[in-house]
Length: 84
Image 1 (cartoon, rainbow, N blue to C red):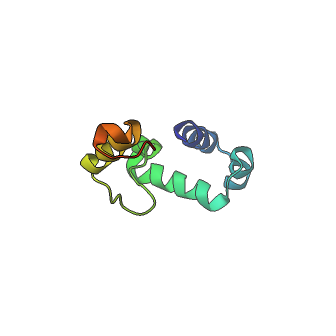
Image 2 (tube, rainbow, N blue to C red):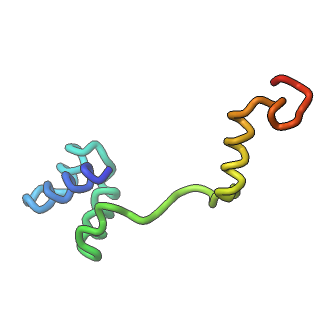
């Protein structure tokens, strides 16, 4: 994604129009404009956006470690009478 954004910005700096850049990178013109505007606001930091989509995590790191330990050990080691 970083390479894609850098390529988009270089194409813009070369004087290409948004519609041409959008065809080159196979993206929507609005997306191209958003990246260019973000570059104008914060500079090269736009190459590494700090956003994350989706729902916030509900598992804590401790919960995740417990799930991994449970899944990678045999049930008999964990004190359960079954084998699977």
